[in-house]
Image (cartoon, rainbow, N blue to C red; front, side, top):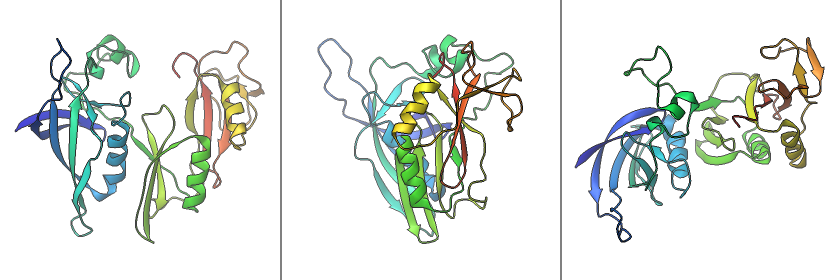
Length: 272
């Protein structure tokens, strides 16, 4: 038995791990480490964890980040036990070290300038708590209709889990995004369609609009804002067409889901 430090559900977690026989290594290379983990998560986070594990199964997917390695989840993890009384899901998960992968905080290309340079942002201490945005909850009136819409947009379906008619969780992720959306039955008391201003970064806003139109998703016209910083929630200061200089963060287009939850496409060629 050993202890691994792996990032799951937005935080670095200390997890007891049982070593497994290493996969046979090619001549001249070291054997990759493999472990069996047991994870305990509350029912309300089951869908989010399931999505993270699924994403980390792909050979070139979003690996689990550890303090000394990156980890691929092996196919076939199981929910060992769960129950409405305890509200806890107990997972049996097997992971394998990813050869030549570098943890995000070691200076490899990754999240933000600090990840690329290996340096912390100015003023951040070594023991600063990480708070990574993982899920946005959307209020919808028709779960199946919303699910179909976001599948048309291109969001990946990570989980669709129903306990009964009063509680259902649908978890989906925009392509290329580290943050997901969650909607369903009994997951929020907000009024359907009341969310505004969710931004999706794209590298080419004109191409993004064409792609959405081909999928049957209606977008508003492309615009830029002369305020110089962001864009206003009204038409004031808006001008039709993309920013003439095509500067990062200056060109936008909007679309809404069937309930009216609003999304904004934002062109950032350098970072998309």
